[in-house]
Image (cartoon, rainbow, N blue to C red; front, side, top):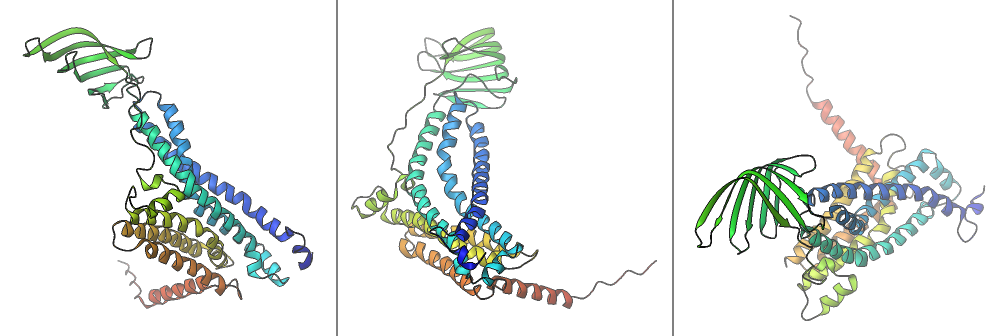
Length: 406
């Protein structure tokens, strides 16, 4: 097949081939990363809501609202890893050498990946700018409802139930959480006075309507106030009492109390307002930070090519490690810039866009430096210099003396 055949048609054969190579690694990396993050968070949510009524329904809603957040976190990493996989495959099969020998430039080979980066940049603006603010508020609304949903009638050993002013705990419980030992209850009586109940054991049973829990307490004491207001101490062999299951409370505030709950358009509008909901510096740092994270995606192919081509065989670990360090440094530099801007230490514009310009310029410099000799990049030269330096230091060290035989 000639070079002319590779570049023929509106969507060229070369582009279709490279995009097909990229699609499945990108989908696989993105899906695996998002699922792994969600599973870890779901386990924590189940632990937090273990004593809440209808907890599984709440966890499902919370997990769904977390998807845009984790999608935004995982997209740059998944895109870069997928690029690295594809470039390594092309390099190992000498396909890049064949394309360069047929007259294709490195810029032409990278063009479809840059197009994907631009598409993902627009998609990230939608995710960061509109999906995340609404999902963040929805997550907080569901979490507020779940925390205030009331007790579900079961109790784990050593756990505390604090439900509408009533405190319940037990030293141990059975697997179902309905047979308790060494029980302690603090609650308000019918007149609103505090009373304390302790018992050696208790059996819990939810009533038919699902609105109250009946507790059969054995061998305990009940300390409270009598009609005159004096304390009374009653020992009992058996005591049956009921505890209501409270309904979920509603969210008390509207969306927008936190700058992370505002869309891009709302951030820009509030930044121009004379009376914004939060400080202008906070609004601008949030706005610029979201845009910088989205606009950095098209520069990832410029980093992936020189780092992926740093070595032909078996020595790509330094390139991958360097890429991870650069992505982490970029993310943390934006977070540092946002923190400094919110604290009023520096203006939001330079705090965000100076780190962005540095890392974007570094990507362009690395890519431009690898155009003439793709296998000999600034990264590979740096790695070789470090290896030579380490080898010289090792040779200069004195050799350990051999132990003489006894």
